[in-house]
Image (cartoon, rainbow, N blue to C red; front, side, top):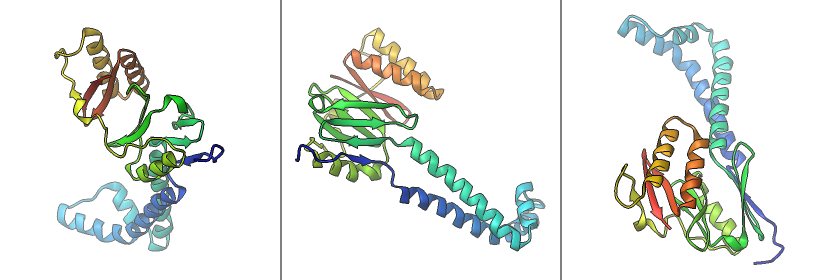
Length: 228
């Protein structure tokens, strides 16, 4: 690895986002030709059709094509923007790694403090030499290959697409054995915060658990923990 090799930024490619927008436009275009027959079929079968569908079907084809194509494009742009916001921007450089979220905030991990990196399901994980996690954040699984190239290009240890300590994870059961009350309280808080979509509170609980030597991850609607 060259000491002054430029950093590599991994994010959702613009071509992927534009593909989503174009797919939305294509669906809108197809809908312009389908709404009329669909409305007629629903009226004949169910003696009625939803108001928006009847309204779209009433448009002359000359208007339906641009209007519905535009609506599809707008819907595709919304989906693309949501997809972009769900994924971090990861800057991998010789001196360290920066993981930035959609809000503009970020987490910097110095090279000396970064032992390895890997993807665990849909999570990107950066760990220290003691096995504690600096970062665990959702990332599109299709970016795993790009992340691997970026980390290996700068000489970091890339551990693949599975947690090397997979066998050490335990499903959390409230008041179950193996954890003290303070850990259970934090896990309860985090579970409620996730259910209420209070990501800030959930992240704070995760950070406090980390200070107790406990790493947490989500599998479906369940929490799993691992002691470090």
